[in-house]
Length: 202
Image (cartoon, rainbow, N blue to C red; front, side):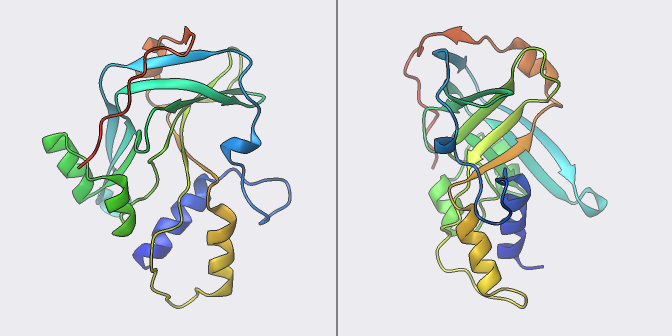
């Protein structure tokens, strides 16, 4: 399976499809503004690191960078807290994951994107369910399928282009229910909070 196809299918899997199949996916702009002005401040990055795939051969780092996350949209079940910056959600794989874990450094989203190494993440934040809603928290990010020239392989073509077009700008999600202790310690506070951007990347 080619890298470009792997990246694409991982994004589609996280996409919140609208009622009519294949006409597009839900973006932040499609959701309602929040009823309350709220924010969360992360004083440090928080990530989880896991091995996945065949023989646990895939190293994955997923999480949030330090900074202020403000309530920007809501749906029937919860609130979307978006980070202040273009690379607040980390989804790093293999070499990029190892680099972050060993040095704390992150190659910029733009560089990862152009190198076809962005498996999601970037601009986004954390979706938190409302009290009493039996759903788990999720990382969310805006899908960016503008990866520069993508080589075509067997099975790609018009359908491939349609999928890319339909999902671009939509929301991708990463389940984050495993991080119960982290979520339980988050302090959702009133107001917009301090203007703390996510750290800039290399």
